[in-house]
Length: 194
Image 1 (cartoon, rainbow, N blue to C red):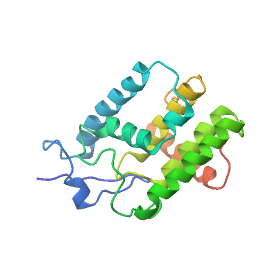
Image 2 (image 1 turned 60 degrees about the horizontal axis):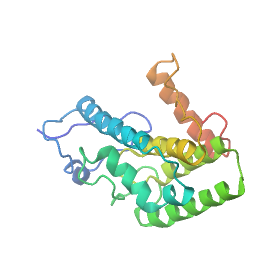
Image 3 (image 1 turned 180 degrees about the vertical axis):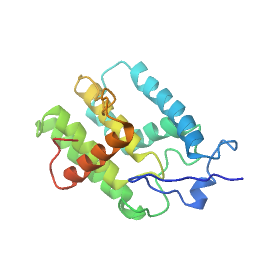
Image 4 (image 1 turned 30 degrees about the horizontal axis):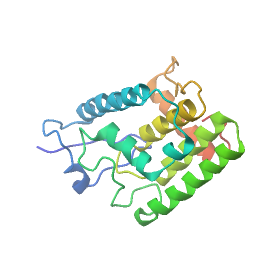
């Protein structure tokens, strides 16, 4: 039958080759895909929690760690989990620029941390915004960027992870619209709402 997906605003469509990387043949709808991805992501979150020791910025802010977190999030669902995308998308940098742009972001963030350039929350949110705009992976970039921001704020700075709106009584479709608007504001340099 194949995987038939409907996309909401802000979601990046998968091409046919990427869809062929689905590891669970019984998944055919967006709802089923969301469910199996969420189970995997919860395992990745549990993995970060179990790693109690405080990481240094130099351990977290590496290409290897960025890929490892994505792999932990989606390895049970996609064969390409943890690998940079091989196709261009409706957003993000050109596929050939991913490695270079990510290295620049990682170096920038190390500088921000070492020099207290911004408050810890802003460092994590700026990192989240830039990595999602690079769009390193075929799928899961928004969720990955939020988890990486949580890792930065918790493991590097010893602070509580962000709620990302989970404590809100606003409907999820309204919350998504608010989140996308906050991303657009961050594109213009204002990180307050993000």
